[in-house]
Length: 410
Ligand SMILES: Nc1nc2c(ncn2[C@@H]2O[C@H](COP(=O)(O)OP(=O)(O)OP(=O)(O)O)[C@@H](O)[C@H]2O)c(=O)[nH]1
Ligand SMILES: [Mg+2]
Image (cartoon, rainbow, N blue to C red; front, side):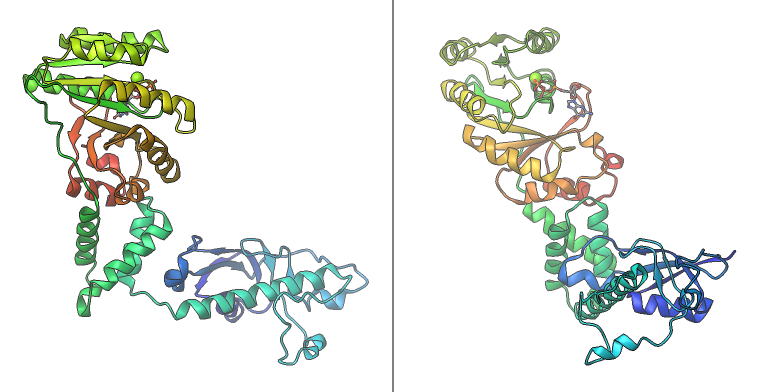
């Protein structure tokens, strides 16, 4: 049995290829949309239909033996949608087609019939009609191959289709003449476009003797405490600043102990604060230091009450900076919502953690492009103090566009 695969821009053409090559008794084993993603109006011209067919398969008749003549005279679709298996056999003249003015049934018109094969046939005909129409529409929005490849690269990097389409359109708008055919130039242009969109803060600047107070907030388990430990160790051990720690995460004993362990290892003063009222005292005790890093309990962005509670702690502390910690493994929607909900506590920057765990970082693009918060740090591992770096626009743009984020670890 010989199984062959055919590709065409639309179903009509694909079926024509099958018929020409394998004859009218060919059996369609599978059809699939090769570019299964919807590529928005401007990009849909490149979708292809792939049909797998064979001439050597004996498909049992689906008709009652009393009507053998029509068995071989029908397109017997075993399912009505693309992606399903269908049987293509010879078709006799269809008297019913004459009932329609242009010889074709209107779209979605399924003639009334008790014959399941006839209704399957009608559905299949409608489906082919739709696909032909879509491909005709798509042809109007042809993209040059190089730009189309840019689009698919973005999708591979986990950028959502809408963002990818907008970016490709921007690149197209800024590229003329022969440059459009140069994939390296297009990629470089895209990267610098993204780079320009990403705002960063630069590193935290301690105030000698003036205790710059920086709080880290965010959802549970995103890496707040670990990032505080990395920052504290770097500022204390490498840059020789006087650093102190405050934790307001008293909900779990383990959380306090986790930070205390780091404080002991790095040899830092640490204050534990249970209520907003205790906050002022704690800050006063650390007032002569250059930098105070404040750890907070993980909060669900949906928990309005806890967010307000956090806001009260931060207000009492008089935090100079509030960095929202976001795990880069989270989805775009959830990240955007988190940014939006935590804005209530006065966030000033965001830290993107766990870059090493993400297989691609395109999900971050709308978040960093939105301009809601500049990015301060990137972290890519559990090692304290090494797995952290100050965020840079060019580096982040490059990481976002690379397919495998982990291959370009920070
Ligand atoms: N792979 C990886 N793991 C990380 C990174 N940062 C933190 N982690 C790990 O993530 C887990 C949670 O880290 P924590 O620092 O306790 O997170 P948290 O936000 O303080 O958690 P809560 O206080 O419970 O809200 C730990 O196992 C960390 O080692 C990172 O950049 N990459
Ligand atoms: Mg913690």
